[in-house]
Length: 207
Image (cartoon, rainbow, N blue to C red; front, side, top):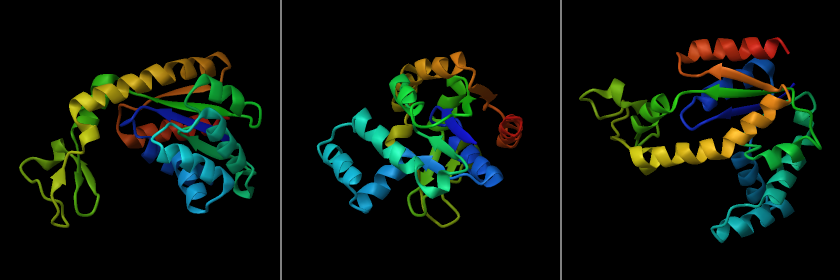
């Protein structure tokens, strides 16, 4: 089973990825992880990607596609995979279709006001990296480890609005692409994660 997971920042992709990987025993493949692995191992692809990153440039489609194609040929992908962070554009999706068959595209859908609330209220512990939300903190600004909870710059309201706008502009055509070929499965992600997971698993078990 070959699955793509789509969802805006704050939609719960990390949680749902964990559930899918556990339930169906699939490798979770994110482009960020692939880049880090190739760069760490100093592979030809890693060297190529690093040359762009070091210059502060976006890694071009040709390199990203080559890296994903290379990763999907590894032995652990023989029975399927979960792709997270790729494809990001219709062009990347069309190229992916040339070397892999996608069974389903799960889109974790959530309205922008809920996403804004989730992300702008997120706090992270400076000491251990634990995350929480302001609704659970109340007057307590300390983590159990004793560290202070802080707000990351990219979780500030104005930055979050920009991130969501960019995501929507990039991903809307991609969603329509997969809707048009019948691969898109839309899940309401604005509920308790338990119910979201149940719906995701139900959709995938029916494939």
